[in-house]
Image: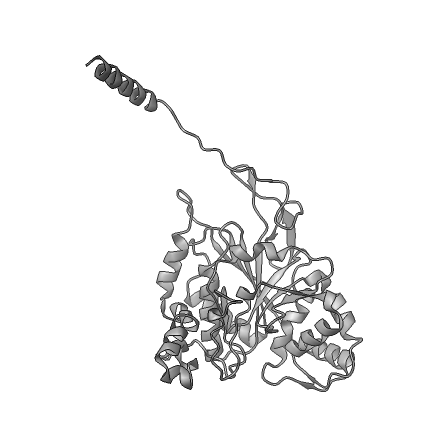
Length: 376
């Protein structure tokens, strides 16, 4: 009996103490002096005039804001199918924006693409929206005809070439001249083709953006698809200096050019993880995600499927790429739907739902950052 009373008194005393005790769980140590590049924690923000940038340090709750994650598109022309494709890709990017870093999207676009892009962003009600966990900006750079003439002259003089890869055209080379357009403060930028969708959060790619000793760019060296690259603009002049030493190239494509430089100057072209290099070749059915060397995919690139509009909402989604025995074999069709078919999620999800998804990631108590658009 006495033991029971003592136990009851002990429990009551414990509960009374708990009411006045605040438990604080220590957070792991984190350096606030450097960013993931190992350099002082700064970020690039546009000044009042969109044609200039300044380096500033921003603080939130006494913590320095991490540097932006930079993503680049190249846009040429105003084809409806092309922009439908780009819209799906952009949706996947925004839904997988880094959790802890601002997102800066850059688009090198010719005048026709600029006009179509401006209207698309307005139709989607993106400018001024407050759906964003981190500062989110869209930077548009108009690529006028003189700039394209300079690209062609550089290719002609460097390679003694008189023909381009007509599958991709001049717009495919924008990515290799980004160092002439992007602010010089950008050390690393991820380039994506418009026929690419993102399945994984970009947070997992951040540590692969560390500046290399010599790399001008990084590509999936196993598959050699230029539809998803990491470009290091400050080191691209070394890439073009190497190009000048190559033999007569004849027929020129951006991907072939990168491959030639990689073979001759392997120290200029680095690698990226296999999960970020999954692509489909023309008229073929490859489920890389079932291979032992690629247990999952962070991106799906429908490369080389000519004509544009690979994702446009025609009622079939990406199923149009399931051909031959893929359609006749139930197991292969199931494999397709659970791998390449995952891209249909971004085809089918309405923008209202996609933006609600983005809004749901805003920290509790925060209003969300405003989506900003800048024209250069």
